Image (tube, rainbow, N blue to C red; front, side, top):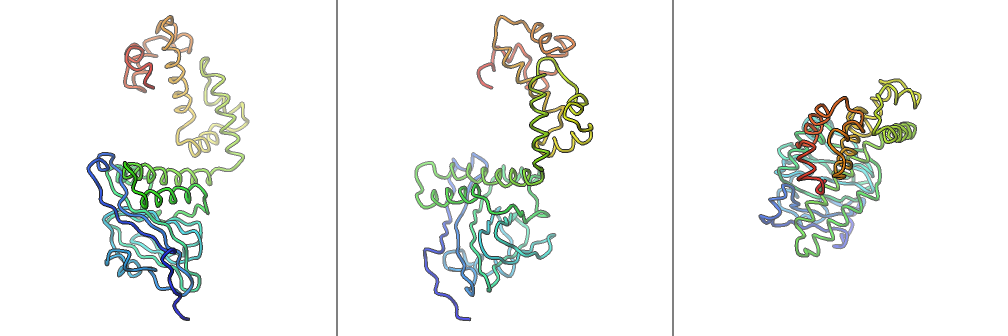
Length: 303
């Protein structure tokens, strides 16, 4: 098979300097680009557009000092990394690469592929890793073709091209948005339409009882499931147990009531059916870091 002629418009990459302002935001973009690799083409498509180490080792194996997200929108290929077996990659798959973790990937010659990628660093990125939101043992995310992710990458690449004032800080925010979209799409894909409807009904019930209070068992009975089932799908959908979610709703309602200076702390505690104002005050402080009185004085108009 003859090697296809590569058009420059089919490939773009930009490696960026990072200024102190971007570093202070604790997540910053180092590089980004895209490549439309046709069938039969060598990979990477335009080696001279990348650092030599990238061009020479991306197929055979390399170790990065940064994180990268790689989205495949067409074609197929192969990916492997330490602790993750060699696997086929298809359109709609996302590979997340981690600093210090050896990996390799490439499109197959029969199909080529279309890829978008962004590299980033920062303390916030490491916290996401150490908090278990992303991990090398789940390096491939099969989320399907997503207009949201493609729009994120297009915004990132547009900013890399234009480099308007403040673009580095905006790029960091877009990287975080990209990661959030990946997480949200995966969370949604694990939740059935039936479970989504049950979560919606459970939240409606909570809202209608935000002042009077209701037990999780009563919520489960009202929507027709047992406690364990409610706990399972609600936590999967929201990241919180029903009790934790309802408690946050009640604390938020308390904040609203505290804005009414005519209501005393005791009256608010009674209105929300807490057993007494002292229990209410302890709970409020545990959830907000302030007593109700402190919040009324210092935080009522800040959230």
